[in-house]
Structures are given as C-alpha cells and as structure tokens.
Image 1 (cartoon, rainbow, N blue to C red):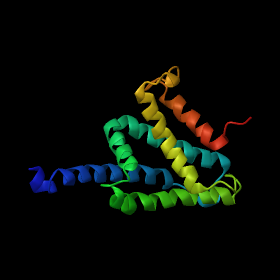
Image 2 (cartoon, rainbow, N blue to C red):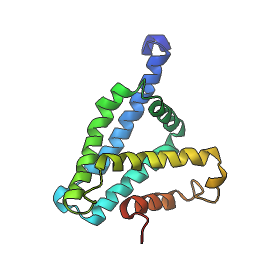
Image 3 (cartoon, rainbow, N blue to C red):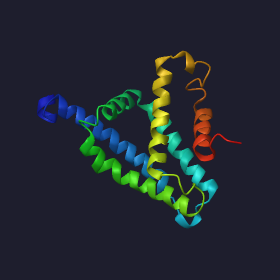
Length: 167
C-alpha cells in the first residue's frame, strides 16, 4: 500500500513532512493576516513576536515527534525537505522578514539587527531549548515545568527577544 500511494517509504516520509509544513505555513499566515503596516507600534510588534513564540511552542507540544523529525532534517542539511522548504516555508519567511524590516524602519527594532539572524535565532532557540529540556540535563533542572508553565515560557521568550536582557 505504501508503494502504491507514496512510491515507497521515502515518499511517505516526504508526504508527512509536506503536510506538517502546510500546517505550519497556515498557522504562521494567520498571525500576519491582520498585520497592518501603518499601525505597527512597539506593542503590536511585540504581540507578533509573542504569537510566533506561542505558535512554535504550541506546535512542539501538538506534534513532538514531527518537531524531532524536522530538527533532524535541519541538522542533516534538509536532504528530504529542502525542496519543500524552499517552495513552502521560504515565501512565508520572507513575509516575516518584511515585518521585521518594517519594525526597523519605524525604529522599533534596532537598525543594526539583521532580520534573518533574528528570525533564525528566535525559531531555533525555542526548538533548541526543548531539545535540551528533553535530554534531562542537570543545567535544565529547576526551569519551566511543562505543560503547566507553557504560558510563562512564552512570555519569557517574548520578553527575551523583544526587550533583551539588559535593564
């Protein structure tokens, strides 16, 4: 059956990745559907950052195994997902980058901040944190308890990426 419908195990694997990427894109687009460039403020930009953090966090909890698969794909250089990533995710990433660039023009995001690096660090720091958390390392003990502290975690990461660590 797998061979008939998917052309083999690799085809099934790619179909699973594709469906996950479509879901991810759909959720990200919902965040930016109501984005109004002329009304961007520091508070609205912070809200968009929080929405992205919540999305990544919620998707991790909704599909923990899929998150692991996608992390493995990224570590391995996207051997099965590169084409899908470039076709599906890249256009949405460009949309996010435009919002970040707009925040720079309005003086909300520091002018020397590279939006691509900012976006990459935002996504990967959250996913990396969860990977470290799952490993049960001593350095991660005493931190957030999931799922109880999920909102607290989202607020922490939002503050970190929108306000930094300096007083």
